[in-house]
Length: 232
Ligand SMILES: C[S@@+](CC[C@H](N)C(=O)[O-])C[C@H]1O[C@@H](n2cnc3c(N)ncnc32)[C@H](O)[C@@H]1O
Image 1: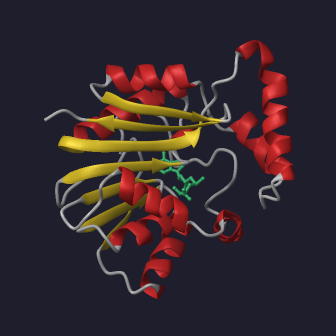
Image 2 (image 1 turned 45 degrees about the horizontal axis):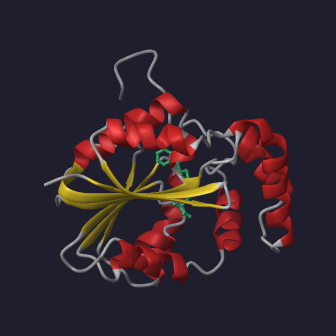
Image 3 (image 1 turned 45 degrees about the vertical axis):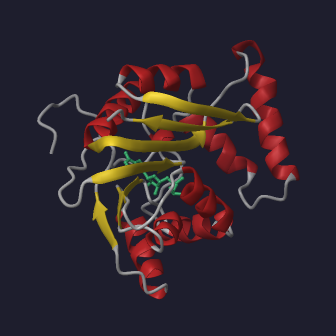
């Protein structure tokens, strides 16, 4: 446990309550088929049986379960026990035995086990306010082996701040039009209560923690993917 009164409470849920088993089920069904995302991760991160992955904020465990099929081992952590229970049941159904599920988060997890060569944060880092994101990124850097890679994908803004109202509204409308199962109220709660931020802020945090930013892809001005290398 953190020894300071001022330390951020990362277990406290912001936005969607992922300690609620019904919300967990709903999230999993909203996310649908994840095979495309999993294959992209395998390709981009060059995953094979020599790699050990730490996934932070594993949620319902789809990515961890998919990656475990090709990796040596996956450590899948989350601050929500309801998410971890759901994820572990999914791994059992797929008869995947090389995942360690553990309660813990960006700010509290202390790794012991096989050295980590890849870290993945997929739609999770936005749960922390910006100062704590930078602490989380530094901790991920420290936990990664030299030569390792951090992959971050999240809701990240790249629209000009003077057009934030129309940009956010357009994003919410485009998701509704795409037939997504996430409703407008959930997206509004994301913007209002969670901590998505600007790409230039995240890029600064990644570089100042020591990472080499190999690529930063911005998609539709509300999503970003970062591939960050820890030098040998
Ligand atoms: C939107 S879900 C994403 C789950 C999964 N990565 C995916 O792509 O489907 C966010 C997850 O992050 C978890 N989370 C929230 N704050 C966290 C923290 N500080 N450390 C680790 N996980 C956290 C939540 O409990 C939730 O399971």
